[in-house]
Amino acid sequence: MMTATRKTVIARVLTLLLGRLPIGWLQLTHNRTRLIAAVGGVAFANILVFMQLGFFGALLETIRMPYRLLDADIFLTAADANTLTDGSYLPRQRLYEALARPDIEGGHAWYVGKLDWDLAPGQSISLQVFGFDPATRPFRSQELNDQLTALSVPDTALLDMATRTLDKSRFAGALLAAPVSLELAGRQLNLIGSFRIGGGFEADGYLIVSDQTFMRLFPARNPGAPNHILLRKAGGTQADPVATDLRQVLPAEDTRVETLASAIAKDQSYQTTKRPVGVVFGFGVIIGMLVGIIIVYQVLSTDVADHLKEYATFKAMGYPRRFFLGIVFEEAVLLALLGFVPGLIIATGFYAVVSKATGLPLEMNLVRAGAVLIGTIAACALSGALATRRLNAADPADLF
Image 1 (cartoon, rainbow, N blue to C red):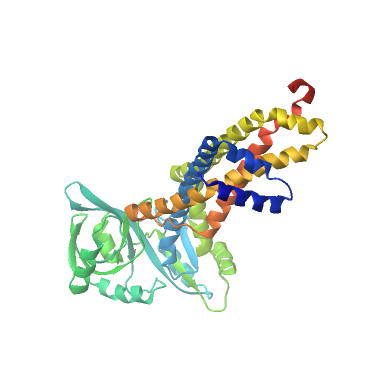
Image 2 (cartoon, rainbow, N blue to C red):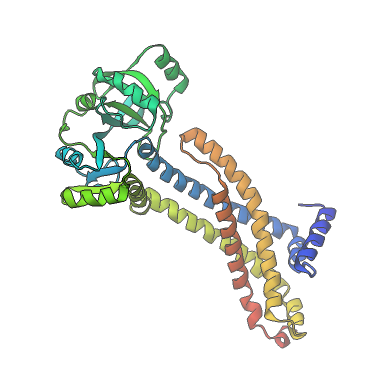
């Protein structure tokens, strides 16, 4: 696993850091097979935790992405809605009631639906369809707002070029040269522009159309009942007081008033704690930590058992309990560090592979890496504490 020279160098460094002979390190490296198995186990647990955290983070990011496009401060939604796509519809009258308030500068209705786009026999893409009045400017992106004017022509649309499994190069080139036609919900649409959001856990991508085209795609929908209403506050006002004021005006039985930030937070909270996918990822993190604790406990417990007589000799000589805890914790921290490095490298590679295959925003970052490192050290330290229980209860006289 490592050369004798490298082991000696590490031992000298640890001697300087600990101020004593690195007994834990010497015991770990004495049995290379056990050390390799232990490091592999910790690395596996790290990979499992990293992947679950990556998927969990991707879930949070894909929930946030559509909101981040919007130029809005206040978010009106149905009282029973938990996400962008569920709940009842809002009466359009709530938009006009909100616009009558002096601290509201502008607003517009937002229609949301979902359709499958059949690319070929047996191949389809699910699209979240957003409908807006082309006369409004609902987005933060000037480029995207400028494209909305062209949507005034019936049966035209803007396509999310980050849609999963889409042949992006072919469509991007075609959109630049001339509109591309696609059949959706029995209607022929012309793609006249593009934007980028990316697929999530509910759909492969997004499509933006005018509110009139939206009604053609969803003939059962009522134009007087949008999914959401987006409001912009007047300059010089704060979003929270404006939202509080609107709650006093709009009926709570059918309308919920949130700032855009709180709407995102509640959507994320609901999908990560109430929806199965979020709960599964949460349990995956817990299971990964348990796997690491069990593996390290087995290694350290076996090591304590193998050296019980030596420990008992030290105990009979009067060495305090913290001396033995120090040795075991030294082993635990070393195992955590040795297992973390390959786990981090392999997980980063998996992130790249999964992100390319699925389009999900999986990225390794310092916060996540640091959190997993701290969690790994804590889990290994807990395993070490559990492994020393047998030594604490042992009577030196009974061991010889």
